[in-house]
Length: 256
Length: 124
Image 1 (cartoon, rainbow over the protein chains, first blue to last red):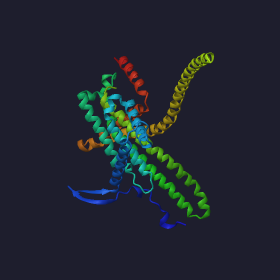
Image 2 (image 1 turned 90 degrees about the horizontal axis):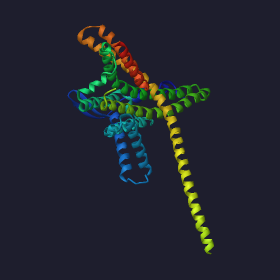
Image 3 (image 1 turned 30 degrees about the vertical axis):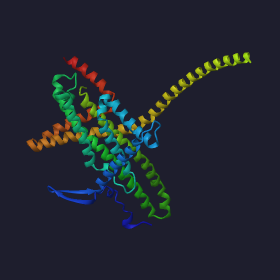
Image 4 (image 1 turned 180 degrees about the vertical axis):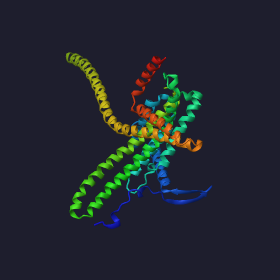
């Protein structure tokens, strides 16, 4: 049926950035409103609209929207309280926005033909840098020079100290990288895998009736992978948020 | 009539006591059921967290090595000490990756600290 160039599906094509509105160049750098920016705006509008609609008519017995918003609030608040203590609740707006943005962006990416914002390392790296900058700035603001105590574990013999401090600093510097790469790699790999397995269906279909029967196997794989991807989309937002909480905990209480 | 009233009063107080007992039992049942349900909910959560943890351990380790290699390479570029910066910082990055993994796997941090403390005392 499908033959030639048609069944050669390009699994990377879904991540292409296209310009929607060109905003000209500022200082030699091209600025444009891209499909990525469009989906970020859609994500933010969806979250804001949902939260406003859910909280505008607050009732004691919550409506469906309101209880969903309450579940989201409770989930993030418990996560933050468990890992950073009640002190950490001052970062609740930050962590909640971060979690909701990543979660909704991941979930929007699960729609066919939609663009996945978090599958680009530029976006995830920017998010991770915001987190780590906040940790460093707030850590020094609150603890002063004592924040550096984070890099000096207790009970280490003095001749090992330079080595241990170097390792601790490297370990700290690796945080934004692991944070951003994990989210980006999960979304990218997941979407490519989905696309590849879906294209197997077309390829096997090209072999005629026997091929269409054989295509049942990749079809079920695609269905299973879709379910897995929904799990991953939630899980990665959760992991990103909980690691943010743990790093904020380091800024609040720098001693090991 | 009067006798019947007395009887019904007695019956009412008896049924009050029975009601109180039943209420108490109900609240106890609810409590235990709530506990069971929260335990049941906690179980699948740890399963999901297991997948997240597995991916986290891998990425933590790789990130440590990448940061070490990047810093070493950068130092070599600036100071012209190639290849010693890369070698030294790659090894340090490897150590940092292992430290990350140990820390991310959780629970080991406290025991490792305690061991470190003992080691320090012994060496002193």
